[in-house]
Structures are given as structure tokens and as C-alpha cells.
Image (tube, rainbow, N blue to C red):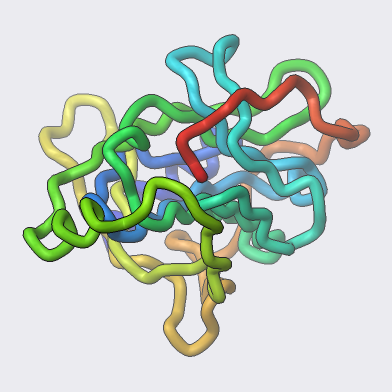
Length: 209
């Protein structure tokens, strides 16, 4: 389709592709995907919050092979077969709105793409439930990091509006995509010589709890 061709074009020309803006309703689950080119499968992937690259503080990171990493209400998964990073936020709250970055940690300058999170008003039942919910308590574990939904892809310059694409995550096998939007994991970026090790930088307090 035309959308798949556009996403494929972005993937070949850029090492990391992320939606410029995602939105979700208050109290519901928000999911988004970031795609990277082959050669970065073994690198640490992360989700950080901040208005700029330099001020961005990590919320969650993978730092491990293919296993979901979760902190409170937010989790991150790196699927190395299809070169996709899946981020899931449970029980979306008003304070979750803001500027974030999807990143790939590497030697030198990290690959980073900005993502704006917008929190829409929930329905009456959701707002009532949130008012009754205690302010503290343990977060429940997410049985599956994947939530089928809608992904907003970055639009090319000069084109009005934004285009929605159905999520590639199959309902028959949660947690693993059947295919990337442009077919297979591909790209012209060569594999880096060595992977960065460890967690670079600190993590500040976040609303994801």
C-alpha cells in the first residue's frame, strides 16, 4: 500500500523511525512502536522523557535479549527479528503527557527520535474509577506487552494531516509481530563495530509508577 511504501522509504533512509505523536485516553493503555535498521539488534533500547536530547532521562530500557522490561506502568520490549521496539503504558494518567524520545544506545551519539504523548479525556466511567482509585499501591504485572491498536506514523514534509495504520501485532501471538509494516527488517546502516555496555546516564523520578 501507499502507507507501507512511505514507511519503507523512511526505514531505508533513517536508522530509527518513530511516530511523531501518539495519543491515548485517560485510564486506558497506550502502545507505540519504533523501528530500527538491521545492525542494531544487540544494542540497548530505551524510552526517555525530556524536551531535548541532552535533558532526556531514561524511564525504561531493554538491556537484555527480547524480554519485556517494566517499571511501574510502562514496559519496553525489543523484538530483534523484526527490528521493532514496543512501548506500552498502562492506566494512562494526565501527568504522562509530554515530550519523550525513543532511543538506541550506541558508541558516540545515540540514535534518538522524539515522540509527543497526548492524553485525551477518558469516558465518564473511567474518570469515576480513577477518582476512586487509591493514590498508592503496587502495579499489576502486564501479562502481555503487546496491545493491538493504532499506530500514528510520521508524515512526510508538506503533506497535510496524519495517516493511521493498523497495528502489525497479531492477536494469535501476543508480544511478537507477524511482519514489519514494510515487510522485513531491512536497511543500509552497517552493523556497528561494538555494542555499548551498561546503562549510560542516570534515571530521575518519573510518573510511571
